[in-house]
Image (cartoon, rainbow over all chains, first blue to last red; front, side, top):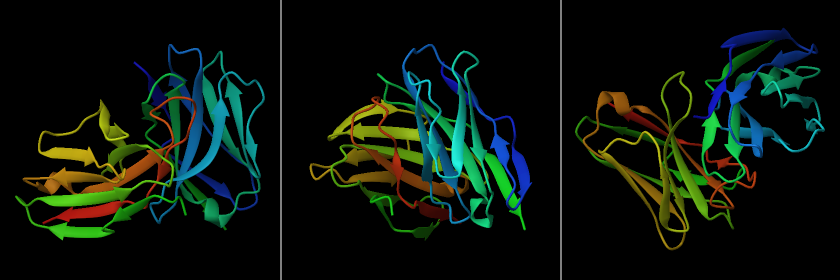
Length: 114
Length: 115
């Protein structure tokens, strides 16, 4: 079975600091994709970043970057220069190249402190 | 704006009633997913449709049903509602049937409150 684990239910960070959110997953697939989604208090689900498992290079989107360790099945999200608007629930997700299922973690609630 | 439209935004109804939630996917997306998110919980996958056909089923109750129409919009029907069905229901769309790394694009959700 494919599972996604986020072991940090809650985190906080000072504004302008850097924070890393952890995610591990379990899959027997060789080719797959990983995502981070953000859910702010408005409850929208917003795609933050996407990583292809066969690419060694870590994905980056402005202040958001990932540390993808394929052998360890780890996919952490780093937020640099944290802003108040980054306060949200963050969900890690995984889908296989050949599959149609998205597997979501239970989320990490991040609070940015002014 | 994700381009996925869900209506209504809010719905308040009584136990035992039936409601219909509607979703219009992004232009060009053929696949629609439905998720349930209870208060302070993660996302529970309910069901997926691709181009009008059911593709995958998750933890969907027998009281719930869905369909995708020829114009690709989808409806989620919830019947014999119980208090525990109160949740945020998301629709998400994707270009492909699955795989190939195409991300899900979520609507803003329908907040269902059963009293």
